[in-house]
Image 1 (cartoon, rainbow, N blue to C red):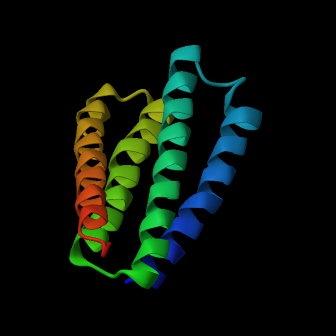
Image 2: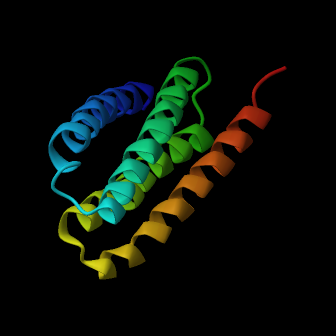
Length: 124
């Protein structure tokens, strides 16, 4: 499982750079300012949680656990739901997609809780 999480973190990091550059160099002049804020928020949260996903993978190399696996998959779900919905919202303006965003936030919270649990269970 750690290898899968590390690969997913690397792919997310690569996409993060691509999407950030796309937003800064292509979309900024084309999207309304409010939409650009959504795009930037998506990039920001994807970046933070890509690092968390990377941390889960690295920690899992030495201390594999179910809680770490849950944390990693929760971070990935949060990236897809939270950031993904904001990317689409920024591009389309379809506000009903905003109903998906909080589900991604819940996944992020679950990921941080599971990571805390995994860390608590580490050997002393």
